[in-house]
Image (tube, rainbow, N blue to C red; front, top):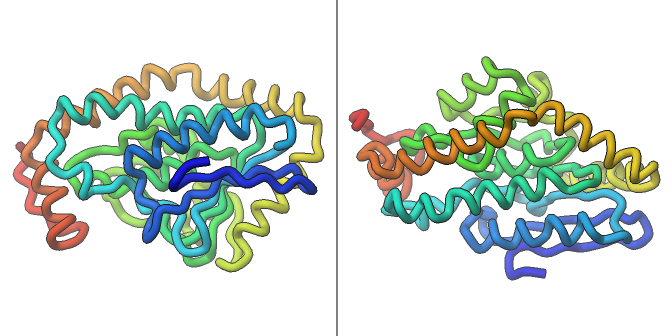
Length: 261
């Protein structure tokens, strides 16, 4: 349905797949975000879709935002887009059907936040997840500070967000960040198989269960997301953010010389 995001429906199993395809690493630029936001109601409203899989392909789920595009953006420019970034993932999180993320390769930054919008996460044995935004002098801006603590607890979420480190599949399974780990070549098939099982279930009851669970957990998420958005966009007015992104583009991650200003 889009240049980088398409929806594929298996009529036999009633599984709809939201497939990211922006080589080489499915970087989540504004166009991808917009296409994800459009894909959510497409599967949510399709009576032929009983459950959903989000997949980035066999090599990488999504390696986060496009840092080259974000680099140099002003506070005003980021402020204009930060709400759209959250809106895309909120739309995915509110799909009224069971959603399974099939994670191959990296799910970092916005990629990890994308996986967090799903009800369940199946990861490849060599997958790595994380929120490395702190290494850029910023914080997660697409729900990471809100959905990650709700999933794995505040302390574990803080450990990942404060350090920016990558979490390997075995650790992710142990802390509840992912629900199942499979060989890389089997991840999508396992996720689609699980989704097909839910697609055969009582759709209205599953929708009600999801709304009740998420509604109870997220009673305060809108306020939390607002706080996150303001903090995220304000950091683009700092020298640290400029240094973090320049360092990433020029020398790779984790080599910035921050001065806390």
